[in-house]
Amino acid sequence: MAAAEARVDRKLADIKAIEEKISAARSAQSAEQDQQMARLVKVYETMKPGDAAIIFNTLDFAVLIEVASRMKEAKIAPVLAAMDPEAAKALTVALATRRTSPPADASTTGSGG
Image (tube, rainbow, N blue to C red; front, side, top):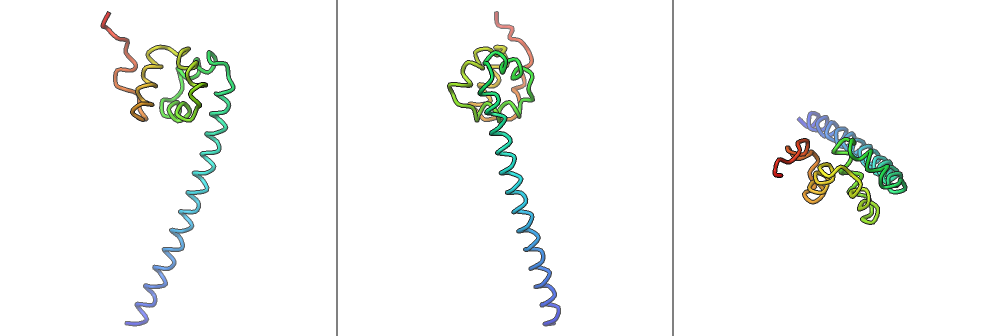
């Protein structure tokens, strides 16, 4: 019985060590992804607002939110102003509510007028 308990204890220790390695690897990967995103944000912040807006109009929505949410207000404001109004609206709502997918009606034009 004691030998079986010792084996179980060793297995549990092995599992815990593997979990710690996985956690460390995830942390390193997350830090690297944060650095990559920070570099990407810097690229967009240094672009002319009109040029950034052209790209933002077609960028994957989840990526767009990540980039836009990390940009300085003074840098994102002129980009939003230069974007397609519907795309700017969807981005603004998403940033305000922190959604990662576009609203259902973001791809349709309004019929109110």
